Amino acid sequence: METNQPASSTTVFPPASAAPGMFGTRIPSAVAFAVGILLFFLPFSEMRCGNSAFMNQTGKGFILNENWKPTGTAGMLGKDSMKESTSKVTDTKAGNSRIFAIAAAALALLGLFLSFANAKTGGAGGMVVGILAAGALIALMFDLKKWFNDSLAKEAMDKTKEGADNMGLDKIGNTMGDIKPTLAFTPWFYIAVVAFLAAAFFCYKRMQSSKT
Image (cartoon, rainbow, N blue to C red; front, side, top):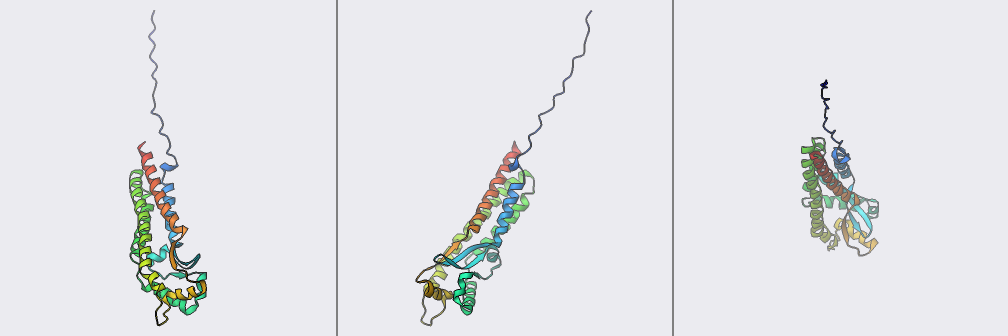
């Protein structure tokens, strides 16, 4: 006598999707964009004589077109020449540096907001915005160097017959010797560029992880 036994049914569940790693979340790109934005409050550029910086400008200062700020070394210039030197810098248009600084900050803020969007929008959009923000800062650097070399450095080394102050750099020269003034960019500036490029990379990794 045969006994018919019902076939046992086995329910097959789809494999659980692996949880996204750190690069698959919004945290890395959001942090990178936020760090880059905060660095705008620190000095981005310095005017130097030899190894001594006597004026600097922050990223925020470029955006708001503020006066270059004298550093401790500038104390040797005296109060009156300090006023002249800061007003001289303000009166001379620093090329398109303000435009590039505003563009970099605006792109960084947009990237920060995109970091909180979904992986597809935030990944692709944030990657493009991060690269553009870093590019805007690099454009600021080249534009500011051109402006300095074409105008301020030439004025600073031109000794007028009337004994004009020439940004006060001639008095620095009397103390420090015949050292040409130079324009330098601080580590904070380069860290900001790296932060935006890192944010673009994190957005790319997030976009890639959403496809798996």
